[in-house]
Every structure is written in structure tokens, then in C-alpha cells.
Image (tube, rainbow, N blue to C red; front, side, top):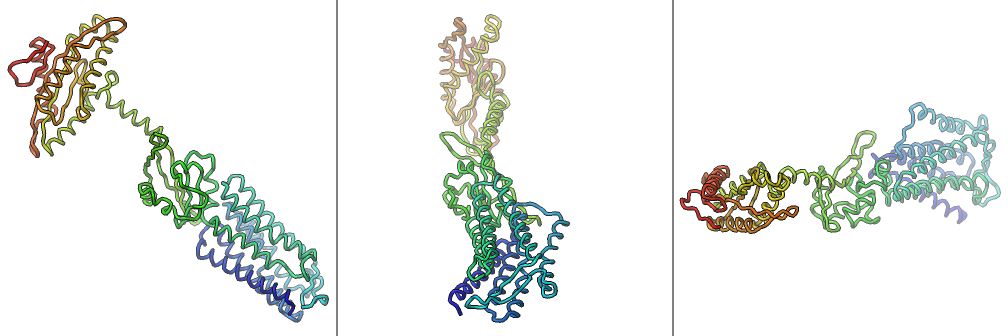
Length: 524
């Protein structure tokens, strides 16, 4: 047998094996994915066509060649139709049932006309063995229906290409590469058919079988490199490069199908080479994020970026096929930093006194109740100081309430500057303030109160050129709380401190009075 034809026979056999492998690979790995079922069908049909053609070109008589040619045409007419259906499903478009079934008319008629060609010669005008070659090969002269079938095939392929190229407008770069790979695969058989029909192929050999398998090589590259039949077709309508939200698309095996540029703010290590790799592997150095993503539940996540904290809400959306089966997952990172800051601001407003910037009465009570409860567990001393501004009403009556508010603000600032981080101060009402001092002895509480009193007396408020000096009176209560004992409550301690405060006022103001102490130590 001629060496050239032997090489071609080997190439055709390899092409048939490749088609079978790609169909089987997709059947095992991605049979539920969009377009996969038609891809599987078209590869198997191509394998039938290809192996039948091997027997045709190795036959020695016309009858043997015609037998294998009829077998080829049991598969060949359906191949372009399956390619069209594959592309429709791949991009998420649906064909109406009436149109879907009517499209089968052309390939069925082709099979009928081809198998009965000896009766009417409507498909091939003549069929004979060529005599100008060193090996037997069919010479076919196409009839009217041959050209009908050729036009139908061409239109199926062209519509498939158009469908794919239209999808590129709303696709990311990697999806565009994926679509271009598919498109290139579809164009290969058209080029081969052009050479065959115009007598440009060597010895008039049909280049279709090999060209179709080369076409599936492109599709195979898309499967392996770009995860062609996983989540990408559905995700293309969801993900856009202009989205502010970061997005990662995973297939059903947890492999990265694609991501948009915004997600690189959250996971800077993402690069194009991570496509097709496990997301969990990529997050080995970020266990907090990996834990959240592995749980698959909506949760907040924060990162430090350019000296500030960025807050994200992580959301999960399943990707379903038309049978409502989950074939992948879309993970979205929504920047909620503005919302978090607004919530923090509202919480701040809810617990702070707007004028003096110390805790308001209700939040002070909640905060100090926790302090007392902690002391009841571990034990310790606690002191409470109540103080107010002496003759504050006179300031309001003489200078006005705006000036009185400025004085209140100044006094609150003096008190805050004198406290530790563990101390809690609040505005009890009007010009009266309250301080809770955990783990503080009575001597330390008295020293602190007297220090604040002294600083207030020495401070001169300059408000619109008006010099104002004020004094304050202080009352102190103290308790030693033992572990697992029902000690005094914050309300009781505040009542006692309030009584001491009024005792200080009765004793001349501008002094510190300890609850229960008979003598008052007054410092002028």
C-alpha cells in the first residue's frame, strides 16, 4: 500500500481515537455542564464517521466502499446540527421545541436520499473508483441534495460561530479566549471541506475526518485549559470587569474558573495561572478566609489595606444547570466599609452624650453593670464618684445656655484627661457627672476626685472674651466585692455617692465627701 495513504490512515485512526477520548473524558468529568451532552454526542458521531472512513479507504471494491460510505452517513448529517445545539446551550440560549425538531428534517432526509441514491442519483450523480491514483479511492460527483446538505452544514457552523462571537461582547478576557478557541475549532472543518470540494486535497482524499478531530483538539484545549464546560457559560452574564464587587467563579470541584480584577484587592496573590487550581490551595496562607469560604455561609471579613480596615461581606451563589443541579459556585466580596462605619457612628451616637462626649446615662449603666458583674466573679474594689458644677444655674442665667454648654464641655474634658482606660465616665444629667473606678481603693478614689476638683478650680474658661471660673462638689461611695458573693449593685453605689455629693454641698461646696464619713475634708 502507498506510504502516503498509510500515513493518512494512521492519522485518521488517531483522529477517531482522539474523538472517542474527548467524548469519554467529557462524559466522566463534565456531563452535566452546559453544552456537554451535545459535545459528547458530536465526538462519538465523529468517531463513527472517522472509523467508517478508515474502512472505506482501505476497501478494494466499489461495493465495499459504498457500504462504508452509507455507514458514514448515518452519523455525518447529525454532526453540524449537534454542534449548533452545543453552542446554543453553551451560551444559555434556548431553541423553541418546534424549531428544534424541525431542524432534524434535513439530516434525516440526507440519510434517506443518500441510502437510496442508486435509485435516483439525487445525492451523487456518479460514484466510481478513481483510476488515476496508486490506491483505490472513491470519486464522487455531487448531485442536487449533496449541495443542499453542504449548505445546511455550512449554515449550522456559521450560526454556531456567530452565536459564540456575539457572546464575546459581554465576556471577560479568559472567556473570550475560551470562545475564540471554540470558534477556531469550528472553522477547521470548513477550511478542510473547502479544499476537498474544490479538488485541492491530495488524491481527492476527504479531509473531513481528520479536520473534525483537529477541531475537537481545540475544544479539548478549552476543556483542559479553560474549563470549557464547567461554570463559565452561565457566569459570563453575571461577571463583568467593571463590577466593584470582587467575584470568584468555582466549578463543582472547587477549582477556580475565573475571577474579576476587583477580587485581587481581597486576594492579591491571584494570577492567570491559578485558573483550574483549587481555591483552598491558593488560600493556604490565609486560614481565616479559607475557613469562611470552606463553610460556604454568608459572613463578614475584614482586611488591613493602606493603613485602614476594609470590611467585606462574603456571599455565595450556586450556579445551577437547567435541571436545577448545582454545577458551581459564585463567591462575591461586597465592600461594606461605608455601611460598617455608619453603623459604628450610629452606635457611637447611641451611647455618647452629644454635648460632652462622655457616655450618656443609659449606656453608662449598661457598661458599669458589666464591670460590677466581672468583679462579682473575681472579686475586687470599686469606687463611684458623683460630682456636679457649683451654682451652674447662675452661669446659665447670667451668660446664657450656650456659654453654660461650653463650661460643661470644658469640665468633662478635664475629668476625662484624669482617668485611666479602665475607668468609666458618664453624664448623669444636667451638670452632674458620674465616674466608676474598678479595682480602685478608697484612698485612690479620694485622691483622683480631689485632683479633678483642684484642676476645675484652677481652670479659667475663656468664652467669647468672658473669663469664667467654676468649682465642683464631689461625693464618693466605695465597696469591696468578694467573689461569688452578692455585692452591691451600681445603682446602690450611685445612690450612696449621690448622698455624699449632697452632703458636700451642705458643707460649703468645692469639696470631696466620702459616703458614711462624718467629717468632711474640705480643700479650698
